[in-house]
Amino acid sequence: MPITTITNAIVHHSITEVPPRQKEASKSSYVPHLDGLRAIAILGVLCDHFGLAMPTLLRCGPLSVRFFFVLSGYFVTLSLWKIQAEIAESNGGSFLPVCRFYLSRLLRIGPPFYLALIVGVLFGIEEVRTNFLWLATFQTNNYIAYKGYWPEAISHFWSLAVQEQFYLIWPAIVLTLPKRWFLPTMAAFIICGLIFRIVCIAMDVPPLIRWVTLFGCFDSFAVGALIAYLRQSRLLEQMRFLSKTILFAMPLAAFACFFLGRALMTLPENNLFVALTESVDAVFLAWALSASLLGIKGICAHLLGWAPLVYLGRISYGVYVYHVFVIVICSPLLVPYGLTADHFAFARIAILLMVTLALASLSWHYVEQPFLAWKKTLASTSKRKEAAVVSAAPAEGQVTFA
Image (cartoon, rainbow, N blue to C red; front, side, top):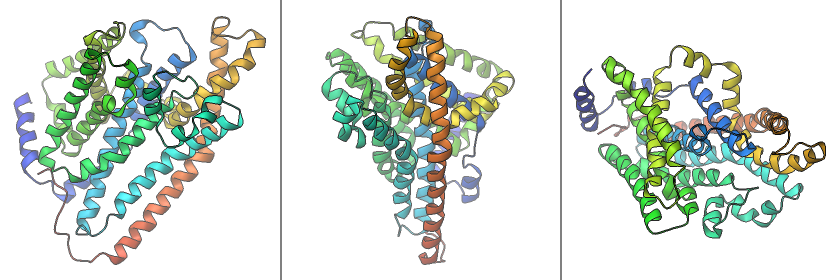
């Protein structure tokens, strides 16, 4: 299929409605390969934070965090379109679905996060005690930007703060934005993210501000939302029919962007080209997500579908939340045995990894899953109550791509 065909299809979807049956068919379903990608992403974070020596061109801790932002943009946008459909079916008379969205996000993010904060206080982690209010209100990123330093024990919470801030404002954008403006708006967000980073570097703004603030991350969420649009409108599936030359070139270009992003990170912080890092990373991440959604085949499919890797992806949130506290609490206990970052480093990393995985697994089964089950129960109960009061008359409006 020539590129012009896909271009014409985008124009067609921007001015026509998507029938309800087609919308139902395009809803996302569980993709094990995405959990495989989550696992690889969290391993990238662990390698960075546990101090595993890696070649410069393979260090991908920051890229891994960006991947979670892209995933959030993708899944949250799809969820909000479902909410938009529910509101339309109720003739705009109920905004309970929006309330359910905020509650569901809190029930997913909150329990392990607040449990970790309590553990941090009980174990005497000073940065948790003195900055508890910043942490508990998901303002860690703004605290870091305000103070201008990287608080090691709590620094990883910056990305959770960014995600919660994204969850707070994204519904207002998606639910009110006319569908014909969706693609241009996402493109504008992506461009503005790059401009923000360039301006920060040009004005000699501290690097932490362009890295941890929501403005510097918004383009990653927009990339995920863009993939959601392509998936929802079935344009993503049409990419299967591109010419073999283009299909062959796409992964090559994506991996070229991956290595270019790693190379850009080695430049001095005041070099304007550093601002391109997140943008070229976005190209690689967009390809990785799109390829997984379309169905990866061969060795990569077996790898990403490998049960242990998929399980690691499922517990990846707990791994991320707990791993820094494991470092802070356990590392001093290993020093008397000669296990430090400089001596017997692999043994130290292995112990930290096992403790982290054990805690994340326990959290998944006994903290996260019970709350997820409760979330599903609340959602189904709420929907039944809404159905009891909504008129049986057909909705006047429907979610479209018009």
